[in-house]
Image (cartoon, rainbow, N blue to C red; front, side, top):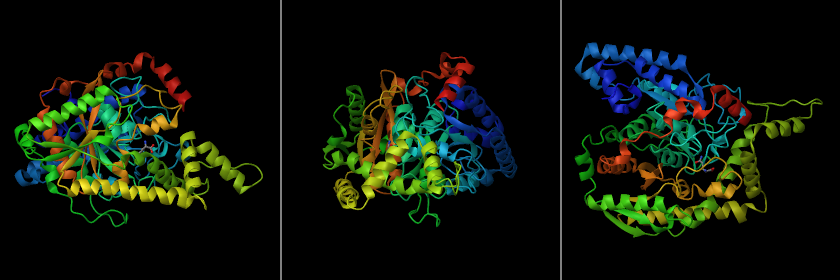
Length: 530
Ligand code: GLN
């Protein structure tokens, strides 16, 4: 094992702290050091909570020490996340802490309570390292729409990490934390996981309580885990999933404990594949897709077939309408959810002379929201307005039903999971898609339908294209997260010997030196971007 604690997998960290060979404090210190050092280059963190994290680490060490003294069963009973650092996307409420959602309009706002998932993480003794950067209100696919400056991809600092949970994905890929949480409304966990070369899962709608999460599009939003391997992501999902009475859409569906016991051995993991049926949806190989990405997906499929799985061509005929329908439904819900930022109740507030409430309201929102958020509010308000509601919103909801039906039919036919690309391209360069909103929207063409249907999907690394990570997406029927993680774990087993598996993100050394800029230059550039 390496002596650098940040290079270990989450379960190796857990084993070391249990054995008393290292402490949660040492683990936390090691991660804080690399996060603080590299954040100037990556801008993955909007807040690093050194003090809070170290005190949580000390609390974890006390529990670990007691369990070690009690021995056997007490040690066994400890949760695998006890004492392990976790990053939180900055739209997750932590009592008394910032929660900007990447927006100027929430600058200075303090969350009055913990989100459900934060309560869960505290209960298992995870260490909350800080809040990660994101596209404003989770709208975007590149993290360039954060009011606090863009995030760099640890594989190439001139490219985007994907979005909107780009800070969480970059932080995990760069070993600032072994685990992080994001939200996925149309792809915002899976797409950045793909672009940063890590594992990211969007659970079934209703699997995780959204209580205490800043809402974007309430019928699509789901919280999910990022990690560098399937087992760690599954353990994190296990910790946060389950019914919460405060979110009426969270479902009373049991969370399988097997999520904590994915196979240790590669052979056992791979054996699970024998006789499984996977579908390869032809519509996911979209026009304009990077041919080298397509090649990686087909190579991955060949691996599955070699291991005894059946892969069949399938069709999801309404896929093409997913993008258009999503960009009606999501902005419509966003326009309603964002109406609460009125400068009166919380967040940024502009008071003009003269006491005209409407003028104050317009000024507050005019200054507080960025261009993409304003675009969505306008689109959504228009789609919901009298006379257009039937033509746009209602029509989009009907299309949504058709998309869901496509998936239902496939899974009813006995297909275990679908295999598809996560993103049509690898990480793109800053500015490449910001001039054309539709080009940016296309980045999620392969992930949006899953949200429209409320299904689970996971992105796992499957190789590189021109030195940048490619993600393989596995999509399952509702509540099939365990099956998806078993498939993901099997794929890890199949590719354990691949040359790309052991590679570190190529730009980490550069990140240590702030991408060629002096710290002052980088700070000035970031300040200008803000
Ligand atoms: N990129 C999509 C959008 O901008 C999805 C974002 C998300 O999943 N939060 O809406």
